[in-house]
Length: 104
Image (cartoon, rainbow, N blue to C red; front, side, top):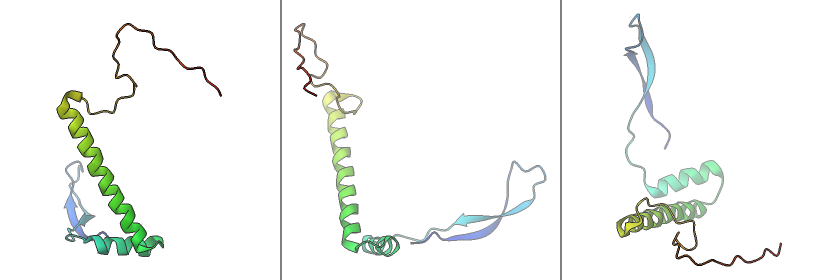
């Protein structure tokens, strides 16, 4: 799961002398399975593997739910996809709305 790279010679266009420089170039290391990733994170962080799996699963579920909510809001005429902040949706029918006194 570590980053893999090779050192290569490269000439940069902004260099006036056009000298070759040695730079690190990333190398695609293929796909990483979920179980291998959870095992590596568990080993590095010192937490149980199932805790990492639970966290990642929850993160993916929340991302999918949030994406679905925004997509539904946008297709139903919500426009921007941002959650509403007002309780009445910004509708003004001319009536005064009573504000409860603060008890704090």
